[in-house]
Image (cartoon, rainbow, N blue to C red; front, side, top):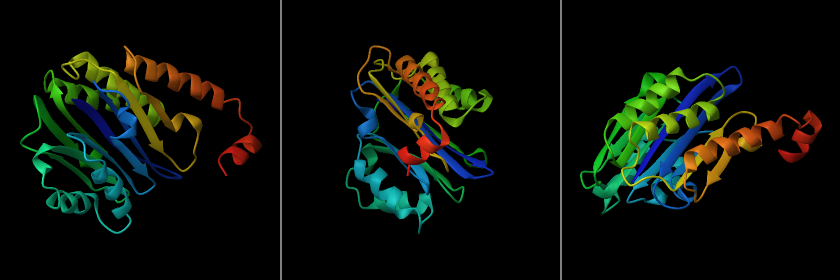
Length: 216
C-alpha cells in the first residue's frame, strides 16, 4: 500500500541521501523512512520498523545488502515485507516478499544511486515513472524526490489513493526542509510540495550565525 524512492548523490562535501514515500494510511513518515549519514532505507508493505532502524544501525560495518538480507533471515514474516535502500559505499538493495499485496515490485539502479519499491499499486508504471522523474528533475535532492512522488502518483500510485507522505534528506549541511511529513491529507503529495517550498523559503532567511545556533 506504499511506494517509495531512496537515493544517494555524491557532492563535493560528501554524499547526500534521501527518501520519499507515500501511502494510503496515516503517518507513513513515522514508520517507513530511515536515514543517517551512513545510508537510507525504506521499510514497507506489512511494515517491520526494525528492518529500517536496525538496518541503519548496521551500515557503518555492513553493506546494505548484507545488513538487510541478514535481518530478513531472522524475520518469520519476511515474505510480507518490502524493504530497499542504499549505503554510503554505493551498495544498493531491494527485497519484495512473495506475499506482498496487489501489484508489487522494485527496481535497483545501483550505478545511479536509486532504488524504488511499491506494493498494492495500480500498475508497475508507478515505479518507472518515479525513477524517470527523479532522473530528469533539476534542483536539490528533496525537490527531485517530491517530483518523483508526484510522477509516481500520476502514473497510478497506490491503487486505493494516498493519505500521507514524507520526505527525509541527510546531507553534510542540515536544514529545516530535510525532514518533512504530511500525516493525513486529501492530497498529501501536493501538500508535501507546499510544505517543502514553504520551509525552503523560510530557511533562506536564516543567517549563517542563526543556522549555527539551530543546527549545532
